Length: 93
Image (cartoon, rainbow, N blue to C red; front, side, top):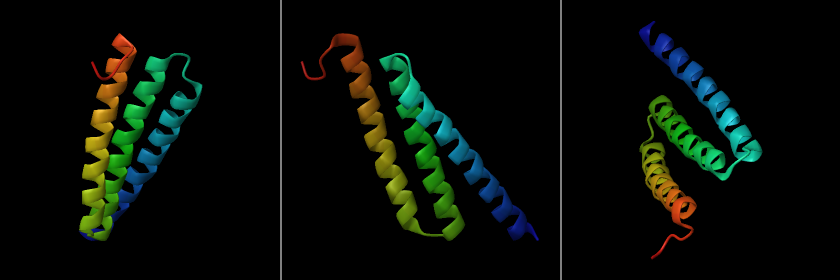
């Protein structure tokens, strides 16, 4: 009984994360400014990380957790680089 409830909750969470990814993709494609697009990409990688974590919980596979960690690290670095580029016009000084 509890396992079915938890699996149903994880499934609903995954559906909501996919909807959030669709909204973030819309912001990336339609954003009027570059800052909106960077924010959309930031939201997209965070929701993708959470979606992979929920897949890992659901299947019990460690591979999803490692992929989520890699995406989180690369997403943070790319967001920081894009923010620095938008502020100064260069990434490497």
